[in-house]
Length: 77
Image (cartoon, rainbow, N blue to C red):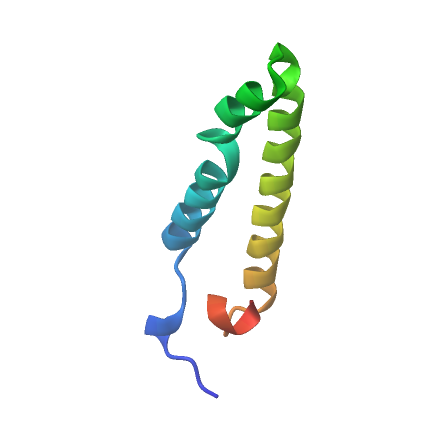
């Protein structure tokens, strides 16, 4: 199956997807929800760990896209 140039994700689109992924998975919602549930200020450890997990997932997405430059995001997902 041939993939046209229009079907590929550009570098700027990849950066936007990863940035939105990181923001949506925890930076905006996790700290407040965690503090309300735990009622302790030590939640920053779980926020930091969650951020590392999200960065790792973003890194895996980038590596997959680099290994399959002729495929779209949906094809290698």
